[in-house]
Every structure is written in C-alpha cells, then in structure tokens.
Image (cartoon, rainbow, N blue to C red; front, side):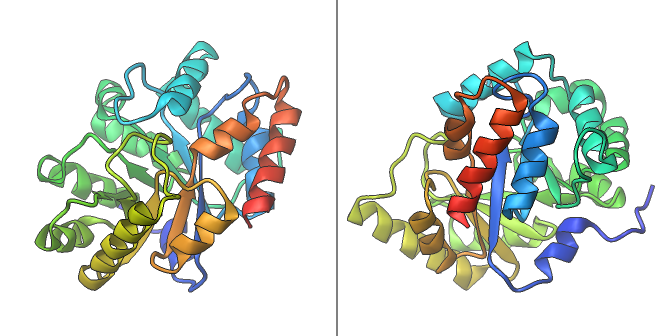
Length: 270
C-alpha cells in the first residue's frame, strides 16, 4: 500500500536548521510517562523523537538504556502497546497533539514476531514516520526497505567509524532521508568524547562521511550536553541525545515529574 501524505521526516529535513534528536524509552521511568514526556520534548524543541522498542537483550546498548528497556517491559510495553501510545500522542489523548516526527528504534526480533507488513501498516496508521533497526544488516534488508518505503516510512541505516568510503556511499544511497553515524564503536552511553584524541578522530571520521554522503546525517553515542551538541553540529546535520536524557529523568517518581525533568534537560541542550 503506497502512502501519499508526505512523511514528517522528509518535510523536516527540507529545512536547513541543525537537528536535535531525542531518544526516549517509552514508559520510563514510571508507567504513564510516555505521553507527557513526548509533549515536553516537543515543547522544548526536539526536532525528531526516537522511541525505543524495548527488547530483553539489547546488545548494542549500554547499561542505562538496557535498564530503561527492562523498566519499559515491566511497565507493560509491547510493540502493539507502543504503537497505541504513538497513536494516542498523535491524537492528543492526555497531552497536546505530538506533531514532531517519530522514529522507532529497535531490534528485529520483536518486529518479525509481529509480522512484516502488519507491523509496517500498523506503524504508519499509528503515526510513525520512520524506522532504525540496528541489527538488520543492509545486505539483508533490501526487501524490507522497499516494503517500508511503500508504506511511506523512512528507513535509517547506521554508519560507523570503521565504515569504508565505498560503503558509506552505499549506505547513504539506501537511507531514505538521512543516515545515523555512531560517534564511536561502543555501546550507547559508555564512551566519553571529551579527550582530545577521541575528539580529533571523531571529527576526521565525520569529515569523511561528509565527503562521501549526499544525504544528511546525524551523529549519536556519547553526546551529553550543549557543548558537545554544538561541536557535533559543526560536522553533522544533527545530534542525538539519549542516555543523558534517560539519566536526567530516571529519578522521577511520577509522570508529570518525568515530563518536567525532560523539558528542563532538553531546554538546556537547546
């Protein structure tokens, strides 16, 4: 089924401003947090919101996101339940309508269990704009890519510091609207970008991506504060902040408190 309405991600990337993307795990830190936190992030200036699909064995994530995923599962989040949360956010049920682009980021097993086209159709109907599936290699995803595009969904692929130039060009050609660069080869939230040698290596790597990519690209992993966001903006089209956001709201005891913390943290980045 072909989608005729323009994808929100495609529309947002047409603007020239640098992007600030938020990664949030639904129903963290307490049940009922998702809608108010999404509203708060939107109001505080998040350009795109990545919603994690909780999985019991998130091998690419560090301890903070792993813990958040386990909390989300304990709080009842399933793939179907996550899509319902997106639908409610779009409809403004319990919050102001969330209109910013929403990208789902998660592992392939839960999506395969849900069912390929059923998931793509339900994601589109709920108001999802795109997908990032880090454990689905590009070589094995071409059919999925075409199916997702037929449903009007953006597909984002990963580029790493060891990706050779010819593969950067290939991944760039596959990514629908933009690619996601891992700042370092590490799990999320576990690497520091503060030492000079690491910073210089990341800068050189992002210059290499710029040289070989025609589409926009964002960078994530280890970005924790406004200074680091602004530094990444010098080389990339956007920065992704996830672990630091989850840490900032992790102590909340109620959904409205989580929303206040999320908004305050994000305004500090902006």
